[in-house]
Length: 474
Ligand code: CTP
Image (cartoon, rainbow, N blue to C red; front, side, top):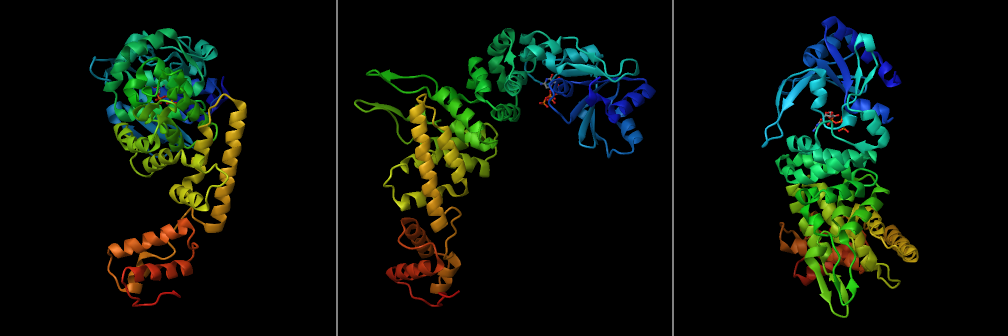
């Protein structure tokens, strides 16, 4: 008996199911995760009968649980017990039609229910019935697949993926999360059915892609997406990064594998999904900006700006959020080469201030991305580049301590400008505000109210404005 199953709640469900004369089982991901020693809080209870009725009865008897949430369309009911989320579902039999992921569902037996599941490792079952409480039922040899670390479908892979194409993404996601391999037959079936991913909602595909992005080594999942051809249907821009051109014996690196390496590097440093997206998209415009200049080699001029412009379309198409997270990704893509320009010894303070201003609070993430972007195989070069970036970080720190640019707020506000010269909002206010900001970034004046105020007066005089209310000491 697995200790996790000796929990009071499983005994309670077992007793009540016996009273109702229905059979029930723990099934799916929870059992898989117990065997893998990955603690999980989502429990699926399979009932040969009504899941909703059993859930209601368990809630009534436990005294401890709150309301039962019923999803009548799905025939499921959910309860919370301490930190556990327990979903009850009646055993079902499913049949699919070719143009939809939504099967025709009818009541079924335990075997029918297990037959409709995706992978052998997800069809593991533990009985909660009195006579064999705690016994593991493993009709498809899922335990052996867990040991062999392989993703295998319960039934014929071709039918499994054609029926529910989301399972192609799931296979790759589980392989990436668990560090498993996908069996050959499955890989062939995914390759064959890859285009059917188009009938799955974008949200679901993106949800799986994000789970792949969040694994410790995302290149594994992306490698499978590439190998099966699914990537072209999910994120075609990425497949265009593939390949190496050679002219006059000069070659450029394969930007697809470079990107995956950067993504793996960043994943070792941060769990921030948006930083991972920035890594995935940092060179996305290299194919469209690529040029060969004789005597000079391959160039990807302005790929960081063109790439930043591509981000919104990609996010919109993938149903990713279009607010702050997208702007953050855009910003990092746009700025990812800037710290390299600060490596030179004689770099000016104003160049450092400008980067601090543009990156703002994301400057540390930008530096992380730059360091992750070093994928040279030459150790000496890697050491040199890292040392360069350590210097850049030092310069950023020194200037930030001196000038506090990172969370730049204009020391003289638009309100003060308007009151001083008795103006309504107008072009002049913008001109003066911008001039003050530029003067601070250039180092002409310090980032202080007093110096900014004097500078404002100087600029206003140039524009022919007169002081009406002196706000110098406000
Ligand atoms: N399932 C399936 N096909 C799908 C989705 C789910 O066969 N397209 C089955 C699997 O048996 C799975 C169970 O439903 O184990 C529960 O699905 P879900 O909660 O999505 O996945 P888990 O396996 O629990 O894993 P995770 O929570 O990591 O997504």
